[in-house]
Structure formats: C-alpha cells, structure tokens
Image 1 (cartoon, rainbow, N blue to C red):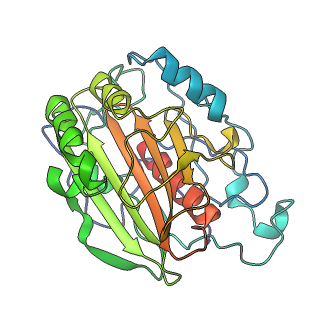
Image 2 (cartoon, rainbow, N blue to C red):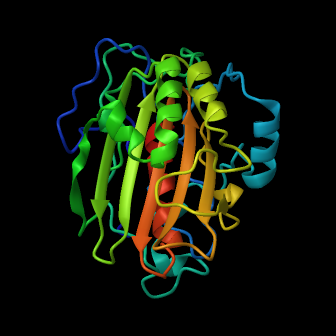
Length: 306
C-alpha cells in the first residue's frame, strides 16, 4: 500500500468536488491518530490529532452488548505510535517483508464542511452528528478495482441495502429501518483481481441514539446479529486487535468460520455518532477472504468517519 496522508478539512482540497449537505447539522471529525500497527497489519494514513476536548458520549447502549464488545475488541482503542504509518515498510519491525496483500488506496482527504460547522466529535457537537455529504465519507476504491455497477458511491434505496441480508430476514430488517427512519444511505462496491468483492454501506440516522438502537435491533455485539446474505457460521474475528481501533468509533468485527459455503465472508459494523457503517468482503471458492486487506479497508473507512 502506498503512503497516504489524511489532511483535516481546514486545509484540504479533496480529489473530487465535494458538495456538503446544507440541510444536515454537524460534520466529519478530523481523522484521529492511527494506533500502532502490529506485524502483518495494513498501513493507514498518518493522522492529525484533534486538539479539541472529547465530549462525553450521550448514546444509550445496551449494557450486555457493550460489555461483550469491550471484552472482545477493546472498543476504546489506543492512540499510540502517532505517525508510524508514514514510515517505510522496512523501517517498521515485522513489516520488512514482501507484499502482504494490502491494497493500494489513493491518498485520502476529508470532505469540505460548511462554514462554522462543528466536527462530529468536537466539544461543539455533543450530539456527534456528521455534517458532510455522506457520499464523500465513503472510502474510495483501491487501484485495480472494478466498480460495482449498483453501488457506485451514490445514494441507494432501502431495497438495495436490504440485498445485503438473507432473503428470509429482509422483511424484518425493512421494519427496523422504517422504525429508525434513516436520513440517507450511501454505498460503494468493487471487485479486485483476486475475486474479492468489497461493499461499504453508510447509514445516517437522525441521532446517535437511533444509530445505536439500530445495531441493538440487529443484535450486533457479541454476535454478528442478523445474518448477511451468503453467510453460514459467522463469529467474532479473533485477529482483530484493540490496537486497530480508531478513536471515537466502535467496531464489531466478524468472520465466517470453517466449514463455510461457496463463499467466505468477513464483515464489520461500525458505530460512529449518528452513522452506522457496514463493511463486507466476500470471495467465492474455498480460500478465505484476505484478512489484511479487509482490516485495512475497515481502518481507513473508520478514519474517515472519525
């Protein structure tokens, strides 16, 4: 993966023209410092720490889910080793190796914000609401990717989002979405030369309470909850470390366990203020979907949301 730099919105000109949603209140956070990358983990862009104090969370979460999540992946994260992602691979112990399968993402930048809009996790935004155009918070596809013709990085319908779940569960998930009344859903997908299909969905709701409630209702926490399409036995991914967490967001990471069916699926939900992200990597055949590119994708997407 090539070196990347994530620049805060005050000084960045995004690669593509960004049109923020004037009607939405709050903003994307400046991306926090990447935690220390353990051997074999994907590199991610160096981040600029946010000098503003972090407000207390005001999200109602089920005690059982948070307890299980905290034990499973240390949802508080860490802020160690700032700048390690900017080092050359041979400068980092354990990374002086040949290509480990990580993908070549373009340089990342935060989308522009309307004047005076607070960041989602700043002191001036206790509701933790994103204000940038949700489409501009989607991770771009890496080099060599073939874009998904349905998930192009724009808005998608509720019906398209429901396609991520098993046929027999779509009616119940549709009811959950009607109850949650999401403001927008955006998605991007692509396929890599090795056959890995990636899909990222961002669901923005009216408040952090609605976002947290949606995960509760999907039973996401110690388990993957409502099964995704083409999945069998999905369990917590023991290779995900608390060192991979990004400050201000909480991730719930799962992988399909052997024996799996015609595909192998890795998936993760992220709770970031008023927004829920679903990241899915899937590869047909008897080989597992690559761990490193999946975790790399999740970390970079979390940085854009944080």
